[in-house]
Every structure is written in C-alpha cells, then in structure tokens.
Length: 223
Image (cartoon, rainbow, N blue to C red):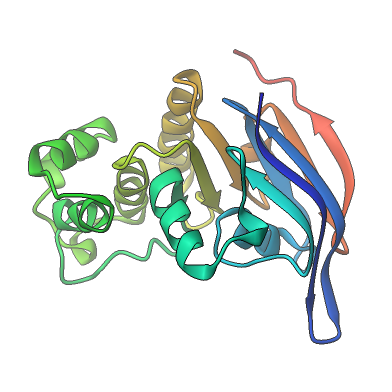
C-alpha cells in the first residue's frame, strides 16, 4: 500500500525549474534515500513531501489526502499530525533543555507529557541528558534529541534532511542504528542525503539530477 504518491511534480521559482515532472511512490513501512548533487531538487522535494511547500504542477497524495490541494493551514495540521521532521542543523531551542524541546513538540500537537517525553529520550539513549541545554550536548546528542522530538507524536512518516551530515563516524552509526530500529518497527522513512554509505542502508535510492529522477537503485541492505 502506497503511503505517498507524487505524480508529475514540478516546482518553478521565477525562471528556475527546481523539479520537472517527478514521480515518486513510497510504500507503507519503506525506507528510501533521495540523493543527488547540490541543485538537483532534493530539498525542494523534501519541502513538498513535508508539507512545507506546494508544487507548481502535479499531485501529491499522503495517506489518502491530496496535500498539493490543501491550504497552508491544513498543511500545518497534516505536518504536525503525520510527519516527523529531522534536520541537519537540529533547530533546537537553545534556552530549553532536551526534555523541554521535546515537550514543545507535544504542546503543538496535543498536551505535553513529561513521562512520555522522558521515554522518548530514553529510546535514543539520552535519558541522563534530559536537563541539559543544547549547548551542553554534542552534535550527535543534539541530533538524537531531534529524532526523539520527531517521534514523540507517533508520525506515520519520518522525513530526515542530511541527518548525519554534521556527525562524526561514531555518532553517524548511532543515528543509523536508530533508523534501522524504526524501520524494523514499520515506520516509513525518507532520508535526503549526500552520503552513499547512508543511502546504502535503505531499501532503495532515488537519484535526482537537474530536477528529474535520473535513476532508482535497489540497495542490497542486509536485514
């Protein structure tokens, strides 16, 4: 069953065609990577899938809802309820603790629950760092807080933009282990990455070039 169906997606910014008639289908529980050089359309595609932008042409259906036809207000609600976003730059609130950063995500979704937020931190191995500010955490720890924040509202789709781009090898391995666990639990994951080693962990890689799908590669991922 397809969770995401993007058909004929184009995005034009002024005189720039960032995406040109892109088709993308993602099954429920699938883990895929989107790769391509800078300017290939990866970020634009992520923004459209993540309900942060709308295509100029084409249709995007997420969990049966045509998000390309929804209002900005409705897209905010869909993003809040169905999508967990993980960013390369973390986007943590610097004056809030790790625990409070997660509880903010709960607040915008429903009601903050400290016990549940602590469980989310424990899941990514950071229970002991719950009261630490972002500046007191390493880059890898900040990324794991981002993952806990993305998961706290039980999204059906996790969308990660260069999630290991600022991490060393050890922390990259920790983050990928978490993603493997999420995939094993049946969560759908789309990772935008420049790193072929990260892409190799997924089931297939969609390669964009000049705003088009250049090829789709099935990965020999060991289960």
